[in-house]
Length: 390
Image 1 (cartoon, one colour):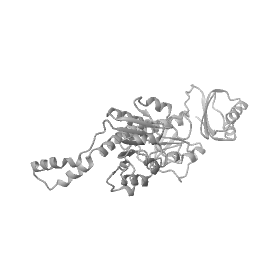
Image 2: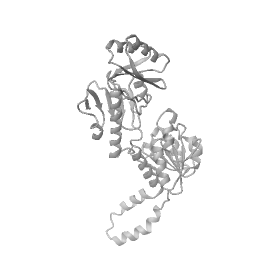
Image 3: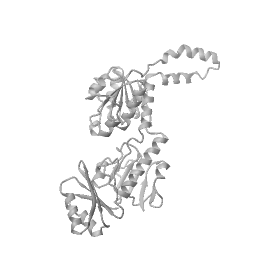
Image 4: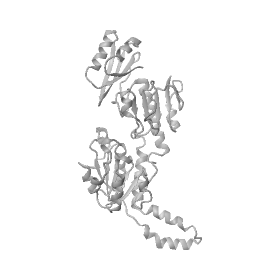
């Protein structure tokens, strides 16, 4: 029986993926094999010795000590793309809110509650509507920073709306490149994109390399009057630099999903309460993907969408047993493990070895389930982190 401890409100459709005959799932589970969570912060929390996997129902994993968990052999999963459509639609809303006089117009109408005459109100609105005139996005240029699951969908949306689209992503993967429309113009660097874009939409992960990538220096070269949209993470922009650019009249508007006190009440800031992925459909998609990835790892050792271990997927042969182990990515470890199996006369049927950064992961199918002495000998190999038998 596998045990999965949940945090936060996980969609029932995700929880229903776990077969009740082989999984115990709940918020008060002891000795869990896995965690399933959304925004729960795990930094500083005790790590159960039984824990082998953590799945985040969402893309961001800044609430999880990924590096620490990797050193313990705990695989951390996220669900990239599961909430992409929800974020894409909010980006579209943000662009329109920044372009048209929608919010001030709505605010003005709500001040007219004292009026009772329909004709009088209609005449007043006809007279005042010019105060809320805006522009159109058609024909404008959208620059997208980060062309992954969300960025590529935003690009398609913008193209469908008649916009020109520029893209910049120095870490563009092959899969992402295949998804990207050939109508998107790839830019070689960030300053070139900023100088040519009427709208700039950020879709990069929060990490050291992206911290304050939008700062005083980069904003100095932004196209005058441009709209900056941040539905990625707050740390990607230097908020003080953004406010200064707004006040200096360089940046036209800032639309974000991460309000900060200094920005509240600013006439050129549209701040939303972190609702990018807050749709029923998005939460269901994230929970389902997270649950499926956890089950495949717990039952088969396969890894999909991990943020700290390599992708590994190997089919299973009926009648065999499976050994998985993680290790420091140094030479000789796999050879030593295979020697252990040979010394114990364990016949290897199939195997796979993958590495990512400082970590490696291995799947070895053997003819029969190994005894405890074999597993203890593998665990004793230098640089082996964790061993499982499935």
